Length: 462
Image (cartoon, rainbow, N blue to C red; front, side):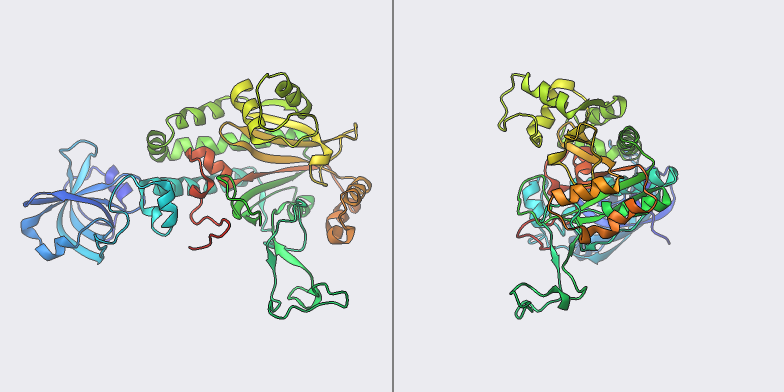
């Protein structure tokens, strides 16, 4: 007989039907006559109750049915007399697939701290919290692809190993096959990367944007969705060394088109979660963040406030609020500044535009004032910046000048500059950090809790 998922069993009303369920035991309780087993297989946050008449089962077998054990159950779907579930299974057969020693299984009790669960990342998906988060993560990934597919975008696979530093940050993981015990050197004593696998210095990418632009210059509208890496020695609740980025690039998009797409995209994703993952969201709302559902609905129903960086600085300066970091024109806004604008002043998501060019990347299109660029950041409550993007500079001459001003080498990005030499076009794009999105959708406060296996400084255990 074929196994039926718990999610489908709970929705069934075929009373009397013989079924097979398989999963992991969340709890077992009862008395000397009957056992009540809560079974979960990951398909839903809800468990199905299995009722076992102990007179029909071997005592030694039932001892092995403990929290964490994996079992298969054959039985009959019946209407449940208890509250909280419409159906339950009356078992006539139980098979043990894998025991879990009650003395050593670390998830015996409820209410484990998130800090403790990070230490057992290989087992934490079995908890209600992380089951909900992982189902939401799947739903958001699917929604990303569905959104862009339905709009006619092409999914472009950009390289993970790269010879360029998109953001100019320099905090990159080096990729090499050189013998670290005997590194080849040039006559000047520098590392001789010509003897390396690729014949040049290479790293793990921090962004697929530059290659994404190449695709947009041929396919019109593309998006990338993949892992990116940053070797930043930061142990904050907002930083990961390995994270996922969604980066659409669109030919013929001006900055206003870019903002419209980003706002529509974010609202679509949040609506998708509300429509398809309400059970998981309700659990997270009740357990971790009582305002989660209200905040999600509010974002989908509100037009994002749009203003310039200069206007934002004026608001911050006249606010009378005491900030830890000084406010003045030309600064890179800190999270406290961004959250003040969103949570205190406008009380809605904000899109900031026209940032000073000196604090933004080389590829952003310059405005006529020669001081600002057509950048745009979307700021969310509780998160700060969730999206960063811009209209890209399409002028070959201006882009070359900016590369030189920033001390970059044109030969390192010759292929990128070529797209401005041959059939250049106005184009725009943005990046959405997938884990930042997941923080907002789940209400979690630590980014380590919205990715299955977090990579942080001194931590690559699992």
